[in-house]
Amino acid sequence: IMVSSKEKPRDIPYGVFYIHGRRFDGYHVRFRDIARGGLRLVTPSSPEQFSLESAHQYDECYGLAFAQQLKNKDIPEGGSKAVVLVDTIGLSKGGKDFVMRKSVKAFTDTILDLVVDTEETRKEIVDFHGKKEVLYLGPDEQVIPEDINWVIQRAAKRGYDTPAAFMSSKPRAGINHKQYGVTSEGVNVYLDVALKHVLGKDPKQDSFTIKMTGGPDGDVAGNELKILHREYGDNAKIVGIADHSGCAEDPDGLNWDELLRLVTFNLSIDHFDPARLGPNGAVHKVDTESGVKARNSMHNRIEADAFVPAGGRPNTIDVHNYRHFLKADGTPSAPLIVEGANLFVTDEARQALFDDAGIAIVKDSSANKCGVITSSYEICAAMLLSEEEFFENKDQIVKEVLDKLRQLARMEAELLFREFEHYGGSLPQVSKVISDAVNSATDALAIALETFSEQDREKLLPLFRDHLPKTMADMAFDHVRERVPEQYIRNAIASCLASKLVYKEGTKFVETLPKQKLAAVALRYLEKEHEVAVLKEALEGTAMPEEEKKSILKLLDAGGARTALGIF
Image 1 (cartoon, helix red, strand yellow):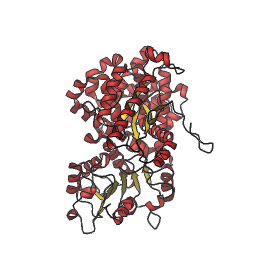
Image 2 (image 1 turned 120 degrees about the vertical axis):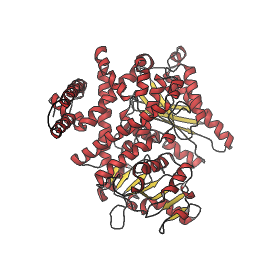
Image 3 (image 1 turned 90 degrees about the vertical axis):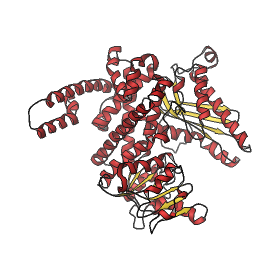
Image 4 (image 1 turned 180 degrees about the vertical axis):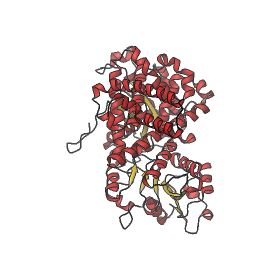
């Protein structure tokens, strides 16, 4: 679909929906049978812009869905995206809003026509797929809370099995990403690990400098500022930050009290008080030509230990302009980039920055994955708990979700740098290898699970339980079979087992196993892991020198299960 003969072959989506309605055209692309991803509305302001957006609408949807697939490796849902191009040209503000809300409703109704099996739809739809389809949406650009509530109510009215889970980020029963800083919690874990591996700096002990895009009033940038100060205090120095309104820069570090004031009051960077600047600091606003130039070049000009794009336009750094990120002598203005924002740097530019200047780049599909994991937990909560049950226990559930996010981010970050240092290549290449290894193992295991006996599947169910926040599992996991679709449970077990194998044993372990043997080896691995746990517990009670005991326990933890399998 939409690929020229000169392009490299692309991964084929699992499914594509094309929906045409009055004043809109929409695509939904997904890469697994059960998939989740955002629904965004695109509303060009002129006929020329509309033509341009129309020409690359599918490519945008495909690219976003594929990026989501790489990011979704830790969760049961595969990646998907919906992009709805709406013609609002020439309409008043009220007219535009009316057409946008109607387009969301019509697009949703058509999706439900295709995935909800009723007598009426069976008469009208030719189904060559022959399988139940389980899709979940999330809000993206220009989707508002009113849309979310309507979509959920409509899914219930139309008979969707788990209507409360059909769209995430519900105002009352969701986990607000900005309020809890879920994406930034993961970004900061990758930054922490990268500073240690790339620069040899322990951010808890050593001073380091950061430049950022995205304002103090933004989700990822604002929360990252709060987390940097929470974790590292004055060791973290923000030497430059740019957003839509301008930029502020100070080689001595921008004043933390002033930055946190802007975050607290949801203010953009142009509100930074110049009186709080050091002698060499400056605030540039976009109301002047020089201010625009300073804002647009901040991410290239300012020197720092690390650059964290946490907002800004996709493809800002591309293969044509990447050299602007380098200094006159060819060395980088920052030796480390951790991508909090999606697609800020193109694939070609990432590779060029690594080849020409050795810049270590933690790719977006790794660095900012915690947002999609949170949305997946929302789906689980909507299936397992009532809205009241969730709301009454929300504080504890959110606390446990945040702990899970940091844990999942650290497991991948440690593997990312371990494999980068052992096997070479660029970090973005290694990031994709990890995503591909987990996703291909998940797919192979999901297929194999269909052939497992009910007894063997029950043995694996604790994997799904352990994946969930403890409070959620304690409250409702006894009802998982009656409340959660069987396909979802199977995918959950497969993704939990796949990520466990890859994060613990590395990508090469999984890649070298024949796909047809992967499930059998995985089962044996779990058995051996249990045996090692029993052995470790027995060892804890033995009388031997403490250092010797710690060394043996460390060896058992690192390779006991794999060694017991006899696979090296």
